[in-house]
Length: 252
Ligand SMILES: Cc1cc2nc3c(=O)[nH]c(=O)nc-3n(C[C@H](O)[C@H](O)[C@H](O)COP(=O)(O)OP(=O)(O)OC[C@H]3O[C@@H](n4cnc5c(N)ncnc54)[C@H](O)[C@@H]3O)c2cc1C
Image (cartoon, rainbow, N blue to C red; front, top):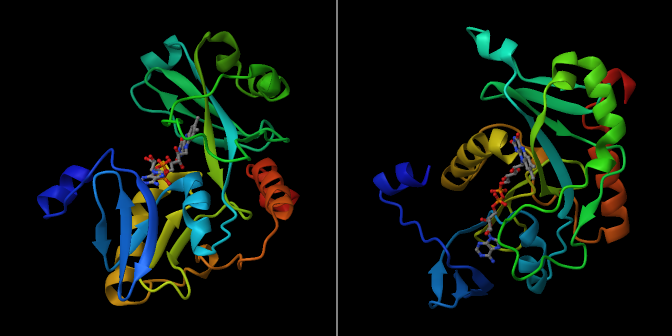
């Protein structure tokens, strides 16, 4: 995406964190160690970092991170022999998603009691690395997965990844303009950002250029939580939304 954007004339600056931002007359000033940047429009696509970044503007964004595990199996001969890829699956019994990864399986587990990460603030030295896995938390889910999918039970586990995943109280991202902050846009709070980031980026670009969204996007609108939600309420809502993410609608 960065390559495509550069071809279209965009400038991409990596490794230049914004320390603070504020409004100066009709534009925004972004403070960085390498100097200030001024911009008419700013999109905050900073996931769970956005909460602290935006707090000095008086914005109380209910963005918090849970730990999230995925497991990748060794090669499974029956998958290797197939002449097509397996479809991706969501399973409400296990509460997980499973998809093919190379010639093995990748399972993302959604525990009934998620564990939050760094509620007291994102460590300054955190550089998007993985967290130590805690496979004991997943035991009951993995038992069900082995029951549901015997091929998974027979395969060795090659890798367990645990990483922080950003959540909002309803599990949907915060997209669009922030009220009373002329030119400040949100694109944060994605928990399936790999899957939905491209579409969200396209919708947001349309919104910014045309002044209104292409569709009714009220379900993801950045201001839908107001500014007064307590941390306790936000965390309780996230707990529920994380745990029920894979339930079928008629059992919610
Ligand atoms: C184990 C695991 C498995 C996952 N599996 C899937 C999956 O199968 N499918 C899927 O769709 N999603 C998956 N996800 C979730 C997905 O990774 C995220 O939803 C996605 O990366 C979020 O993208 P983002 O751009 O919102 O945030 P990020 O990718 O976290 O990007 C935010 C960026 O903001 C930068 N930033 C922060 N503060 C500042 C600042 N002050 N100035 C400048 N930059 C700043 C950060 O350095 C970072 O690069 C998984 C997550 C985990 C942990």
